[in-house]
Amino acid sequence: MFNKKIFLICLITAFILRIILWSYVFKQNKLPGHIDSGEYKLLSEHILQNWNFNQVFGSFRPPLFPLFLASVRLIFNNYHFALFIQNILSLIAIFFIFKLGNILSEKIGHLSLFFGAIHLGLIIFANYILTETLFFAFFYAFTYYFLKFFVGGSNNKRDLIISAILLGLSALVRPIAIYLSYFGFLIVFVFTKQSITKRLINSVVFFAIYFFVISPWLLRNKIVYNHFRFTAQGSAHLIGWVVSEIYRYEKNIDINTAMKEQIEFWEMKKKSLSDNIKNDPFLIEEEVKKYSKSYILSAKPIFIIKAWTNGIIKNIFSPATMELPYIFEMKWTGFHDSPGKTFLEQGYNWLFKNSNKTYSFILLFGFIGVIINRIIQLIGLIYLIKQKHYKFVIINLLIVFYFLMINGPVGMLKYRLPFEPFLLVCSAVGCIELYKLIFKKKNN
View 1 (cartoon, rainbow, N blue to C red):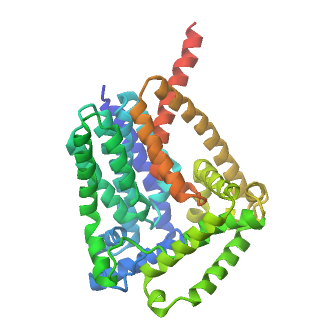
View 2: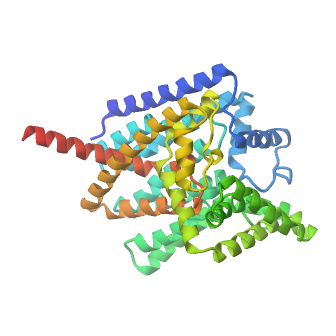
């Protein structure tokens, strides 16, 4: 049964916690200093001055978040106001965490909402000039409607259409969602309880609507760059992180040395390319992919497995407390700046030999919380399987798998948050079952 009082208490709690942090950021009269924030501000400034997406806007970032910033600044030309709107969007995001849990039961929905309300990571990211909160608002809604299509029992095509639109909007905020459309196509085909013809029709409808939503940006790139492509990510991710993480294990060196050497190798190769390729970001990206693919295919599987495994560990266990230095302007040593040839050595130095002892304590506290939470979530996951919520579990796990695989060796809190709703639902289920178990023993 829907409990309006509990629902409102959770939403009010969420709003108060977010506004407390927003008020602190506003009072400091500074914006938390993430590197990407500056670029988003420049892109929004370009839109405000020109209201176009010409070549100056570039090919690296999708348009929706800079457009969001520019639109908000038309109303009130202040980035703190944009952060305020993001805090409202964060409430929308956690509302869909509630809706996702509510597919299983009202109690699970309410507890999932509460966990979303007090989630430190979601609160912090709502106060960054970054894509995350706008992305979460769209993507958490996509997750709900996509799951509802399968688990709701009716296979309502309306839910499928809404989910396709929301996935398209998510991709226009963060390109990491772009390949999930292919995943979605297969999931719709496999898990829909209909004839093969109807399954195929549903899959095509899903992909076609998604494609229609992102098509304006594809057309823009065709007009500006003569490439019917979504974004050109360049060498930063593939060579700077993915290839470098594998290379560090192959050469038994620290990550910063590996990055430096791989970037130098790439720059040497880049010099041999024609000017036509060098001046075209999409052609350069093709060369980056060729270079990366060639290296990865030539690497020993053990080094690839190590890199991906460590990325998964970082994604699953990164505590939200690691983001606090950005808010409170603390001096600290980041994970990738910590010395160590191996992942474990680097992690140990980051946690216990950090230049900021207060940060070490905050990290340790966060890790303890994450480990306890993961145990509770595992209990919740086991219970969901025992209760035969197979589709709900499998489809959510496929979304988790997608993000873990596509991020590869790159791991941190922000890369886990797209599938956080499922984790919070598992937390809610785990807590409910532990509560029943404890009180059942007391009563006996």
